[in-house]
Image (cartoon, rainbow, N blue to C red; front, side, top):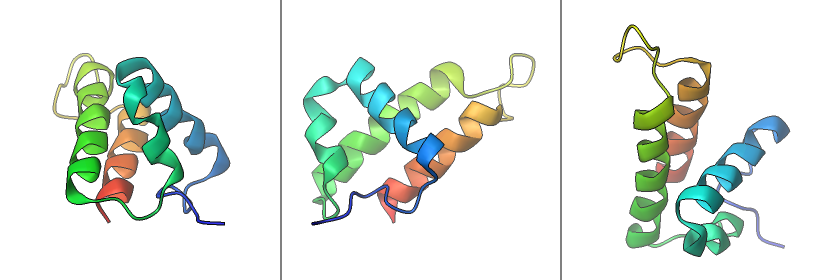
Length: 82
């Protein structure tokens, strides 16, 4: 059985990419189960996660400092890209 691209994440963090993709771009849900993604698929997932980061991942008074949710999203974006 193949591991997903998020296999290195903690169990609690695994729910986040599924929830984000399901809400923002449900057509990409199947990609979360795969380990080997082509460049277009990687960029699509990273884009969805980055949009979530922009909308909800920064402190209200400092838009350049990630909040705890934003830190998780940054880790997820990195995990997709690695």
